[in-house]
Image (tube, rainbow, N blue to C red; front, side, top):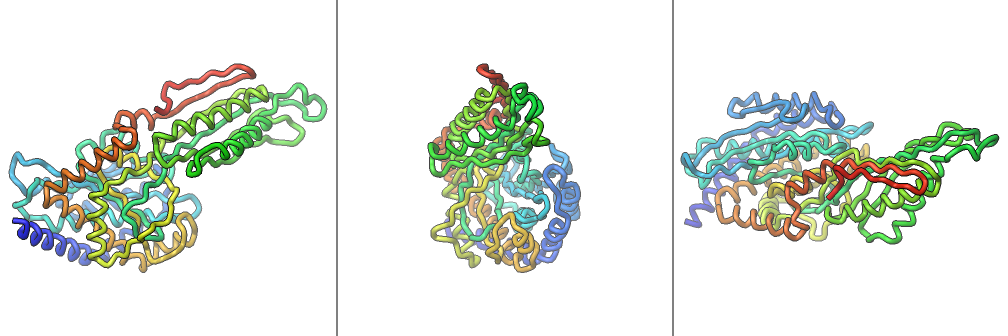
Length: 443
C-alpha cells in the first residue's frame, strides 16, 4: 500500500513538472506583463485584469473578479476525485501583485503571482481526471492586493475569504532559498500635535509649539530604544514640522513603525511608544492625536511538517537551501493568514544578490534569468501539496503543527486577529489632561 502511494505521488509530481515546463512561456509572459505595469496597493486594476484573463482562458477554472475587494480575484478548480460525500481538501495558492512607489516591482511581486499561478496550474493538470484520490480536491488561487501598504490579506480574512481553505501556499523572492523565515509583526502609527501659532520673535509666549512636541517625542523614542529588547524595532520620521521659521508651528505630524518578532509583544511596545507621545504633549501643552491607520501585520507561524516536505521536494529539484539563513526583519500580511490557515511562505533566490526594495532588485525580478528559480519554486510548492493530499496522516500532522504553533504564540484566534486588525486608537491630550479612545484598540 505504501509503495502504491509513493508511485502515485511520483506520477503526480512528474505531471506537475511537465505541466509547468509546457506552460513556461505563458507564465513568463504573465510575469512580464505585471512587471511592465507596476501598480500601487489597492489600485492594481490592470494586474488584476491580466491575472483574471490568465485563468479565464482555461474554461476548467471558475473565476470571480473583484472578489471581496476591487482588485482581488478568486479562481477555483474542482472539487474533483474521490466520491460524493468524501471530505473536500481545499488547497490555496496566493498571488501578490502590488508594486512599490517609484521603483516598481522591487520586491518581486510579479514573481509571487507567477509562482502562485504556476503551482496551481501544475497541480490542477496533474490531478485532472484522477477519480481515485483520498479526498475530493479543490484548488484555489486567490489574488491578494495591497501587501506593501494596507494589508489586503487582512481585509480578505475579515471578509471570510479563508474560511473554507485547508492549506495555503505562497513563496517570496529573496537572496536565498529557505523554507521558513518568521518575519516580524508590525503596526504603523501616525501622531499629530496641535498647538497655537504666534509670531516667533514678537509674541512667542502666545504660542504653543507643536514642533517642540514632535522633537520631544522623537527624542523620547530614541531614549526608549535603550530599554527595549534587542530585536524590537521602532523607526519613523517627522512628516510635517511647520511652515516658516518666524511662525510658532501649530501643527506637526510624525509617522512611526513599531515591530516585534512576536505579535503578542507588539501591544507592549505600542504602550511604551504611546507614553512617549503623551508625555511630549503634556510637556509642551499641545493636543495630540495617535491613530493606527492600517492593519497590524502578524509574524509568520512556522509549520515544521510543511517546511520539511517543501525542503525535500526542493532538493529533489536541485534547490540548495541555506543551512544558516540570514536574519530577516521585514513584515508581511501573510503572517495574519498563517494564524488562520495552516500554510507555508518560503523565500527563494532569483539569480541575483541585489537587495529587495532597490532598483537593482526591480531589474532582477523582470529578468529572464529569474524564471528558472521561480518555476522551480512553483513546482516544489505544488509537489508539497501532493504529499499532503496523498497521505491523510500528513494532513493531520500539518494541522497539529498549526495547532501547536498557535498555542505557543499566545493562542491567537481569528477573533483576536479580527480585533487586532481593526485597530484605530485615538488619543487626545491637553496639558496635564489625557484621554484615550480605545474602542478598537489592539488586544
